Figure 1 (spheres, rainbow, N blue to C red):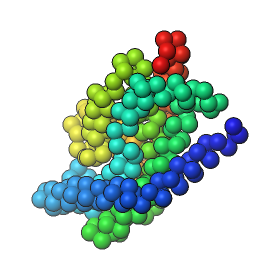
Figure 2 (cartoon, rainbow, N blue to C red; figure 1 turned 60 degrees about the vertical axis):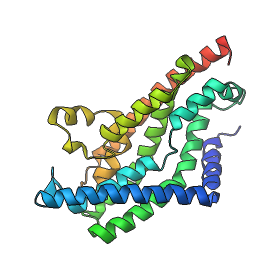
Figure 3 (cartoon, rainbow, N blue to C red; figure 1 turned 135 degrees about the vertical axis):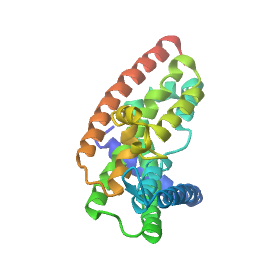
Length: 260
């Protein structure tokens, strides 16, 4: 296994996703429906409140939603549950025979799978936002949203593998997936900007890792030039990576001791 295996794995997975035209079409169609409906609702709410909600204009809310939805919907649905099923079925035990890290091989492969979907979501989201809400509020902030999206999906993937590692002990990750999804939806800012939350909850959510998975790229895309948010994401990516390695490693050792 060469040192370039992460790049090879990402590229190979991206190509497989891109070749699956039907699956890509369904994923992008679902994104367009969800993002359009949620953005329309928030635009209407902003107009009903004098054109602004918690410091966001109707246009900014549209750009926010298209990016917050893209950062989450680009990933495979129910991934935690699927990882848990693989752990329970013994697929992870077989993968332990490979020379590469099981955890990071899976993460980079999932990253490669989601990149074509992410690119498609962004292209469609930008087009729809421009059409219905006008040009981006501050284009310079939009340039920061691109790397923020990649950091967001990577943080999300690492965190999902961390949560899914519970299946090494409980053998069923379904409840874990349900809890995780709700945390990203609300505390991660996927459905609403964190500024809409009560003050005390906003203060807490702004420092949690879930904010790095949806809120940051959406906040930047909505016209807020805050490059420190990229540092926030990078810090959480390092922390989550360390935690995932510890938890997944402990699960793998348990699997080797008790058997798959």
